Image 1 (cartoon, each protein chain N blue to C red):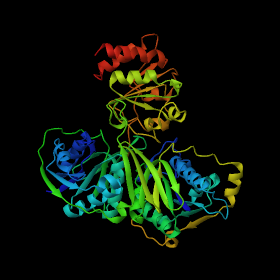
Image 2 (image 1 turned 180 degrees about the horizontal axis):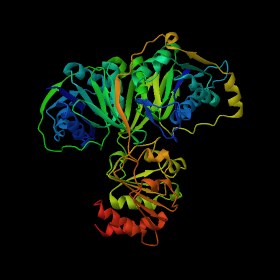
Image 3 (image 1 turned 30 degrees about the vertical axis):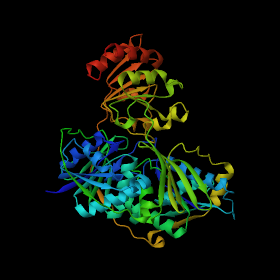
Image 4 (image 1 turned 90 degrees about the vertical axis):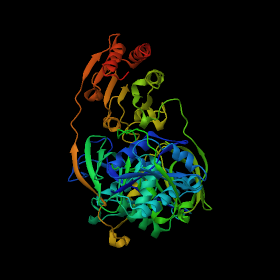
Length: 260
Length: 316
């Protein structure tokens, strides 16, 4: 099987974020591999390992695909240190400020040219939080969409089944290869890169391409930010110390606010 | 006058209050047609529940493909309706299904998309709260039809009764949209508590529960609230991940949010700081969440919550 994992480098989800000129300021924050993509990398590795592994020259490969500035090699390298075989990073100044439609167009082209059987994504990035890119990739490629998976079962002969878990309930869904999968957090416990994995990742290939090399052109974003305003910080209100009547004062507060 | 499509949102066999919220927002832009995607023979009964809010028309599309092929089939049908009706905007509920339908529709009809709007103005400008609610953004789709997903519980809905004109239509589902097949569907397990993102009140527990959510749940039940949890609590396996509030979990914006034993890392604040009223119970007087609390109790949740539960119950 040829498995691709789409990953994104994002500002650390534990850090404060700001907008500058209508786009997220990515320069002045720590950048990391999107938390939710680690589950996708882990799941891809587990699928490969369950069917003989992805060692050099083996039957299965796991390729990391990302779009982002050159600095995104750090996030890609982390996915490689977890055990992915190689990576493709699309960087191009024309992609700055691009929207999900452009991102999905670029990723879909790379995937189409790579001849993969399965594409695995996280459900969303912790910066934009749209949850739309996996569905867009599926629509663009005309591949089966198996998203929000809490469980993935693969028959290497060419069939994949998932358990989809959303607010709407639980669905069992299956499809023939090729398919686009997104996995929810907690589908697995992502491994920490081992020392050996980190050393090995330094020698793995990250193929860097610009849009011309990918062979796709993208339009500018199809939605525009008019303005972005930081909201006034919330002021702290009343704070009491519990001396046996903390619960009661809490109830009084709720009653005053007509919340009960 | 321009026209607007909303994708009617259902829970089981009834329209949700989100449908009325979408209609309310949509009516600011133009006359609202609610699109009802239903199984064969089920459209009329579903459509009859779309009876609140400013809905001018209901368009029923029936196909068994919606149940067997889910998001992709629904998106195919909606995209065709959009091509037929040429609306100014399409409003869809911002949950997993709605966002994914919107995503595919945007690709199919080559239009811009905005997700998680908390409000929509008459010129289809969407308001979003980004970075965990720390920043307000106004944005607009600049190409094609404005595809906007609207977060449930954000728009103040007009629930006045309506009796829209009902028509039936057809829309074919393409072969690519049938490549994934749903073999079984279970509705969400209802624990008797409201859904986290739609609840008016949320009571959450964190590290301070030490794994015992009983007092948090009891207080939530006295208030008719949903139960949430911090990432620390879900990572420890104390509470299901589906209840996690925060940057990597759900974003909630209830009337009242009660955080119990949660220190309040940015991770967590990102998921709850747009709540109307915030109450914090924590042993540690230095817990950062006190800084944004309307009311804080410095104390052990195992002492404070049972008394508060008693107090709420006594007032009923």
